[in-house]
Image (cartoon, rainbow, N blue to C red; front, side):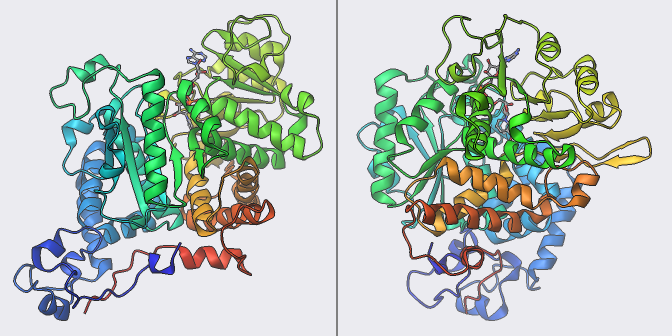
Length: 555
Ligand code: NAD
């Protein structure tokens, strides 16, 4: 990542530098009412702006005033999207200074709503749309992107957007939102970020019938044609942007696992739904174990769900136990999966490859509550997007079985949560060690205030991305995700734990990302994967690479 990534004074006098209205309409360069009198003279802006010059802080105050006037989260999302498209530095300043308030708007849960309404609220394009009809020309299409220094691509095919299913081309809101977090949470320069939608059609008939739907209104491409399209995209992206990290996002699990296996040792890639989720959940478990004084290998983890998130978490937990000296078979027996057909057990019939390692010998059980009673888990981890599936009875049973039951309701968006924070604390008499996928307010109970924090992969992926880019790693490995989980857990203070928080406050996320990026980089050097000479102080190197949303001086 070149240091020019951050904020340089740009040569305003050179012929390529935009002037006048063109400059005001370029979100990467625009300063709006903060252009100085001299810049206004030199850049042809005089008369095109109201005369008073604002500081960036004054502009932030204006943004917040307008933001707070808006009655719904969707309107806030539209407002922030418009700001992102108008003035990037101001957008990131607002997000960084108001992380707790802004993250649930620009990312989960509101981004889900933004995707559902994508065609209806659409104002300006962002990123690249590669469609099933672009076979053979993806390279030339990517060349239309105006920047050559792209270092981070987030790509989706929109088939499994959060817990909302197939949203087709509407899913573009996710790569856009995710990359905004790479920048806001870890300082990955926005100019180096490229959101990509692989629009292969949609099987969502309601969307195809919507006249305002902006994607290909045809059934999804499948089979070899699908694989060829993905492959052409990856080859073209790597040719144009050497060393680029390609993060797969919100692919349905029949493609997600396959694509990860196919590409993980060939290119620099990871799947955040599988690996990032795994690391954030493992960090939450490490925090919970500090309270219970338990060991990971002594836990029985029962997952509600057996998809990307569940098996990703189980695989990383097993890898972490193995790294602690436990044998793999014993480690796998600590993890149990429950899917739409019931408990995943040996002999249940044909099972997808990702579930097979966890199909233990056991009688079939069709009801999650019965599985809790039979298996006596120390932790239940909800990742099936089945709202309300952690019932009062189940939480009470967990509390009978455990002094401090671990309850992670990780499904997104909020409407899909397995239980709310208030329910988890109330039904366990305040004993649950709780983490959630969507944000919940603090809960007052029995004279104590519990502060639930999000087990959200946005703690992990920005730092992993920053670390990967900053040392130009050739691959992103499981060991890097294990290191990032440990680095995240180290940021949780005894004060956090005392109030029931298993994660650090989001407002610390940039420092958290620095520590994660340094941990990832350390592994890259240990594994011989880094593409630069090792800097003496990795954390300092990360901080130097980070984008700050301060306005450059153009004249
Ligand atoms: P997925 O589609 O890969 O898996 C969903 C799983 O749920 C499947 O195994 C399916 O069989 C199971 N399931 C469906 N209905 C069920 C039912 N009635 N009972 C039991 N199991 C059932 O999806 P995923 O990527 O694993 O994501 C699942 C959820 O986790 C989503 O809501 C997603 O937003 C959330 N998630 C949260 C985070 C986070 O950071 N908090 C990260 C990733 C995923």
